Every structure is written in C-alpha cells, then in structure tokens.
Image (cartoon, rainbow, N blue to C red; front, side, top):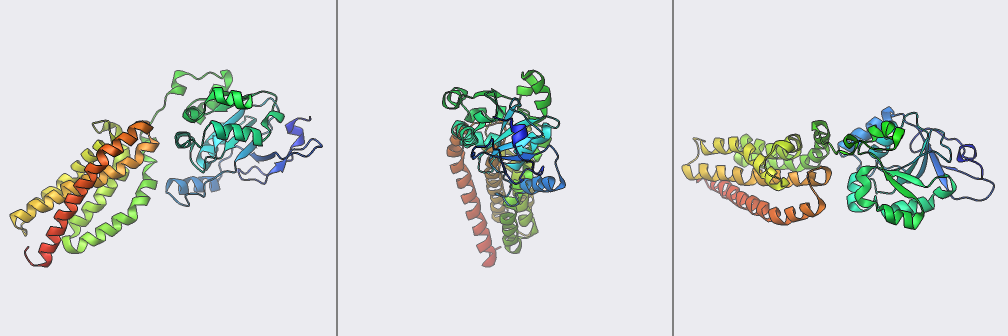
Length: 354
C-alpha cells in the first residue's frame, strides 16, 4: 500500500475543503479532507457568530478524517469535535506539525460538553476509526484525545473494539507543541483553568438569548410602573448573563442557584430602596413594590445563572441535577409571589387606589 502522503489528492487548505478519495488502485470509501493551521478572517467571523449565538447549527466541521500539512503513515492522530471553535483551536495550535485530525460527529458541540452528553464518546470514536479505515492509513495504533474528552471515552473499550490505544493529551490545545516533544503532560497541562477571559467569553451568547424577553419585560413594565421598574428588569438579566460569569469565583456558596440568588439580591437592593422610599406611594404600596423587586430579580438572575452549569469547571452532571430539583421550585415560588405582588400594584394603579 502506498503512503497516504503520496496517494491522497491535494485540495484547498480550508477546513471545509472538498473531499478527496485516497486510492491505491482498489476501490476505497475513505474521504480525506485537507486543512491547514491558518485562522482566516472568515474563521474569526464564524467564531464571533458562534460566541454571539448566531446560526447555532452553522458552526460545524465535516466529520471524518482531515489531513493537516503533509502527514505520513507515522504521523500523530488527534481526535476533535466537529464544532468549528474546537477544530480551529486544534489545527491552529498544531502549526508546523504534520498530523491527521479525526473529527467526531458531536452535533456541533464542543469537546467538553459533548463528552458529558456522550456524543464525544467511545462509540462515536470507534465508529469513526472504522468508517475512515484509519488502520489502513496509519502504521501505528494511537489516537490523542483531549483531556476534556476523557469523561466520554473509555480507553479499554476503544482498545477492545478497535485495536487503537487512547492517549489523553493536555487540557489546552495551545500546550500540544510542548506536549508532543515527550508525550508527557506536566501538572500545569492537566490543570483546568477558568480565568476571567474564559468566563466572560460565555456571556454574549447567554445575553443574546435573554435579550428579547428582557426588552419585552422592560417595555411592559415601563407604562404601568415607570422607567425604574423597566431598568430593574434589564438589570436582572444583565446580572444573570454578564455579571454572574464575571464574578463567579467570588460569589459565596457552591451552588449556582444560591450564587445567582445572592447576586440577584444585591442587584435588587437599590431598586427595592427606591421603591420603598417613593413619596408618591402609600406605605403599603412602597413595601409591596420593594418586595416585588426582592422576589423577582433574584429569581430571574438565579435562573439565568443555571445556564452556565454546563460550561464551567465548578459543576458536575449529577450535582447540577440535584441543584435544579432543589432550587427550581424556590425560584418559581419567589417569582410567582413577586409577580402577584406586581399585579396587585398594577391593578391598584389602574383603579386609582394609588
């Protein structure tokens, strides 16, 4: 069998380049796409759209085998998700490295989340090894899997079902050049970090998803309750989608729900004070308005905070389930009571009582 380097046709260096069929004179179904390590303006635009929640299913790489540079049968093989940000992080980190990238069908989900969902898992890895005829393309039997994909990949099962061994690489793709020198990860390479820039980058997509409901709520509140009430609605959403990931490590307690309730409560206090001291309202209405802010705003912020449980290093799958069952009813009761209080205020204003 001729080497893959000499038998594969050439194609453009785009991640979604047209496939080529490697052939050694006999029919073969394997399609190998060619990519490079260059991140183009189009790639960066795609990354921005993904970060802001645009075209949710439009950031997908073709599953299968991709050729980076001019790999031979002895070149390393890396597994990746078919989410463009995951794939691009891997190929850009491997600048100057000739390698094969085996892209799994994770339904456009990143490695970490897909491992938790099971799409970046043993079954898909084994299936992709077989469907690409990887054993006929490379001479070794080793695949480097990102450490964050380890929860979904059982190396004993991969060995038993495919004959390939799994080598768990470092957490960050940027550490791969150093890792490849010895194929040994340092303690720093194994450590999952979650600094401010990694936390805040999660905010845009969550804010975009909540922006329309926030605008509608603000518009609805503006007319019967005034601009301060409208601002309170927007503030609760901003607290849950932007402030929460930014301040996550510094908010007391372990559960995201209680962290959200605390943050929402802090944000609600100025509004509650404003409502409680409004001179145009009777005392009972002041108290009811303040209670509305203190009940609804923390509940909204805590609910939005739960959206970050699947993309941080602070939670586990079982822990999140327990947390949802424990605190979701609390949020619902708080929001319900606050809405009732708000309705009473609104009806009282319409009837001229206040």
